[in-house]
Image 1 (cartoon, rainbow, N blue to C red):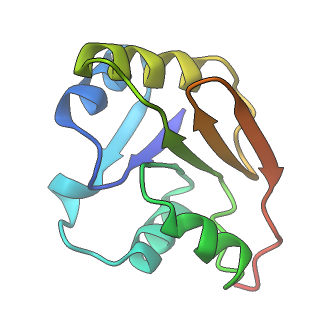
Image 2: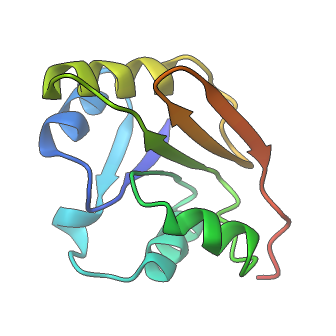
Length: 121
C-alpha cells in the first residue's frame, strides 16, 4: 500500500509500517514544514493514503473540499505506550486494503469511515 505519513508520525511507526510491507513516504524527511494543503497535493500526485494525527485534514476534506482522492486515516487513539501505539497503527492499516476514497477516523474503541467528497482538481 502507498502511504504518506504526516510530519507528526514517529519514525518508529514509519519503520514498523515499512517492515509490514508498506511503501511509506514520510513528510518529516521529504519536505519538513510543508502545509497540510501541500501534504494533500503530494498524496494526490503520488497516489498515497495520508496517515495523520492532525484533525485539520477533516476540515480540508469536508469544508474546503480539497479531498485526497486516495484517502486519509486520522488516528485519534489513546495509547498507554509508544509500542502499543505503533502496534495499533500497523494493525489498523493492515486490517483493510480498500482505504482509498475514504476519510477514516481511528479511535481507541471504534473506526469511523466516511466517503471523501469528489475533488475539484
